[in-house]
Structure formats: C-alpha cells, structure tokens
Image 1 (spheres, rainbow, N blue to C red):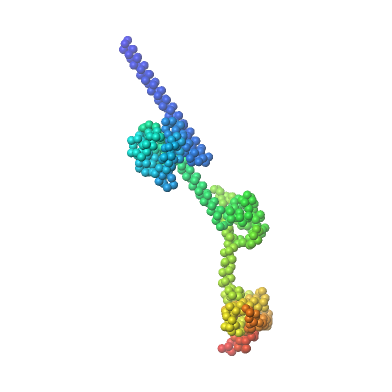
Image 2: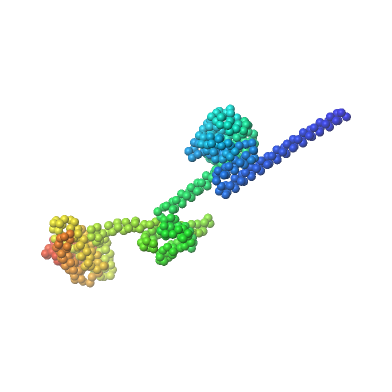
Amino acid sequence: MLVFSLFLGGGMMAAVFYIILIKRRLARDISDREQSERREQTRNHVLELLAHGASLTAILEAIVRGVEQEQPDMLCSIMLIGIDGKHLYTDAAPSLPDIYNDAIDGIEIGIGAGSCGTAAFTGQRVVVEDVQTHPYWAPYKELAGRAGLGACWSEPICSASGKVFGTFAIYHHQAHRPTHEEIRLIEQTANLAEVALGRSHADQALKDSGKLLSDILENVPAYIYTKDTQGRYLFANRPLRERFDAPMEEIVGYDDHKFFDADTADNMRKDDLRVLQKGETIQTEETSFNILTGVAEVFLSVRLPLQREDGSIHALCGISTDITERKDIEEHMQHMAQYDALTHLPNRALFDDRLHQAIAGAQRNKTHLALMFIDLDKFKPVNDTYGHGVGDLLLKEVAVRIQDCLRDSDTAARIGGDEFVILLPAIETAQDASKVGEKIRLSLNQPFELAGHTLQIGSSIGVAVYPQHGSDEKLLVKSADIAMYHAKKNGRNNVKIYQPGMQEISQ
C-alpha cells in the first residue's frame, strides 16, 4: 500500500512537472509568436513609409522604435557614414541620452572607436558585453557611465556588394551577453535598415538624375519639346518657352498654329505626321518667321517617335537648334568664295560656272550669247599717283557703272586687277553685244569724282559671240581676249568684235 502510494505520488509529481514544462513552452511559443508578429508589423510599417516617400530619418526612427517596443529593455541607434567615408553620424537614436548622442555624433570610424566605429571600419559585428572593461570603449568609459550604458552590440548595415552604409546598435543599461535570438534580432534589423537605405539611395539617385536631366533640358541652347499624336505640345523647355514668350500652361495643349504662320505650321505638321504615323526619325532644315521679333530664322530640327512597350507611338520628341548665325556665316563664306571682295561682283570661278551653263543652254536652244573682256585704260597712273586706296574706290565705282549698263540676266565679273568680263546669255546678233559694249565704254568715259579728285579713264573692250567665234568656253574666251587686245592696239577706248584673222595679227 505504501509502495503504491509512493508510486502514485511519484507519477503525480512527474505529471505536474510535465504540465509546467508544457505551460512554459506554450508561453515561450506565444511570446515568440507575439515577437514575430511585432517584427512583421514593424517591417510592414517601414515598407509603407517607403512606399509613401517618407524621409529616411522617419523610416530609420520607425525601425529603431519597433525594436524598442518589442524589447523594452533595449535602447537602439542607427548611425550612418558621412560623405567623406570617415565619420559616423547619428540618424536615429530616440531613447539614448542627448549627452551621449551629442558626444559621439561625427565619431571617426576605426578600430577602438567604440562598438559602432569599429563595426563600421571592419564591416563585422562587434559585441561588447561590458563597456567598462572592453578596450574598444576605453576612451568612452566615462561617457558611457554618465549615460547609464553597460553593453553595446553593433551590426554593420551593408549593401549586397558589401559596402558599409552605417551601423545598427543595441544598448543595455547593464552588462549583458546577447542570446541567439537577440543576435538574430540585430541581424534582421540591420537588414531592414539596409532595405530602407538602399531604397533611399535609389530614390535619391533617381531624383538627382531627374534633376540633372531637367537642368540639361532647361539650359541646353536648343528648343526641346514633345507633342501628342494630334500635334499638341506636351512639354516645352525654357528656351522654347522664352521664344514663344509664354509659360508652360499657355503652350501645353496648343499646336503650332498658335505660334507660327499658317504655312510654317502646316509644313511642321506634315513632318510631325511622318514621325507619328510612320515611325520615322527625320532631320530637316526649317525657316520660320518669328512673329514676336519679326525676324526669319533657320533651324535644324530632329524629330523622333516616342513608343510604348508594345511598340505603338504615343508622342514625338523634337529638338530644334537655331542655325541662323551659322547659315549666315556659311552664306558669307560662300559669297567670299564666289565673289570679288572689293567690288562684290562674281569672281572668275563663279563666272566660269555661269559661262559653262550659258553655253550649254545656248547649245540646247540653238541661240547666241556674247562674252566681253574689258581692260581699263589709264588705271595704272591713278594707282601710282593717288595710291591704292583711291584705286580701289575707282574699281568699285567702275563695277557699279558696268552693272548699270546690263540687264538682270547678264553677268559682270572682275577677274583680276583692272580686268572685267561680261556675259550676255541671250543676244540676237553681234551688234547687240557691240551696243552694250559701247554703252559701257561711254559710261566709263565719264569723269569720276572720288576722294576729292576728278579722275578720267577709258576702257578697251573685246567682244566674242557664241558659236561664231568659239564653240566652247576656251575658244570663246580666247577670241574675246584677242578682240580686246586689238581694241588696245587700235588707240584704246574702243569696242572691237572678234573677226577671223585677228589672231594672226596679234601674233
């Protein structure tokens, strides 16, 4: 009976012990589940802050407070490495004393710079169970004592590539060794902080690139715009807004007819449709009349389609560069290459081209043309007596008088010194050319009043007619030159038409 009672009593004790173990395990499971739920709530709250564009400081403080609410005996901080990469700055440490936060804000990272400075330097977790005895905390023992801190565990916050952004630290008021669960907590929290920092850095990089793009668009010396499929403006950069003398809201939604004359706007719409309907990228040179300045301007415009992911075109982008000045320079350079700098008459190169074209036309149409060579008489004495300045003035006035004797279809050119040539692309007879030559001779015989001087010169003019006096340019030029030589030989100041046999006489 006694044995049975003992056996029964032992069984009861075992059962009671087993029940206690079950209760403890259930309590621990409940506690673990509650911690897991709180961590999940913190994580969700952080992700929600990220999604709504909250500041980085607000997000990191939410992380810290989430841990402290889960573990009330912990005080936490997040410190970030500064731009120089050598110092740590406190970003979230709401429960640590101000005297402590102020003292370590901007601490230089390195071995022995407390738990956080060392962790940031090595990229490894640093667990200091007792800050009063650990060598890493030797410079900060007194500060830690005044702040009431006994332990500090610091986990580096690292990117996937291993770059250290900062540290997450857990403090205790007393010396304390972390449990496996607390190590897991510090790792998970550092990872969550890395997600926030990575997202923040990505957002900042996107903002920076967006600002850079905006700065480029707003300040590049070109007109940049986008239009929808109806040709209505969606965007206009600052130079274009200034050209239109209108703010963005008075440009967006309007087409080119508001800013250009009807013909220009219609032509621009045709080019737009090539881009929008056919997907072409086109480059055109456009001349438009600025209704605000009253000046005709030349632009080099590039239009390209903007496509959705499925390939459909929803808009176009245009870039127009003002090349008015460049075109003026090009035209000036072309003028310099084809015209005499002094008299502004065509030079030999341009005259030769026009003579070539005129002979080709006369050959096709079975018509006649005349070529005249003019050599000024008594020009050298003017140069020698009054100088080249007066000589140049005389040549310019000679050019004016010659042109006054010609039709718009005729060409006068200076081919060097005091020599001029005339092209009459359409004549009936040689006498028609002779009459023009005589008109020029008489005009040049009139006195010139230049620079306070009265100057008198004459001219010797030789005339050759196509095709009688030459069937090509070379022969025609030679005949006109021979005729001019005979005019000089026969007393100067006269007009000679080429005649067969002149060549033999000249030799």
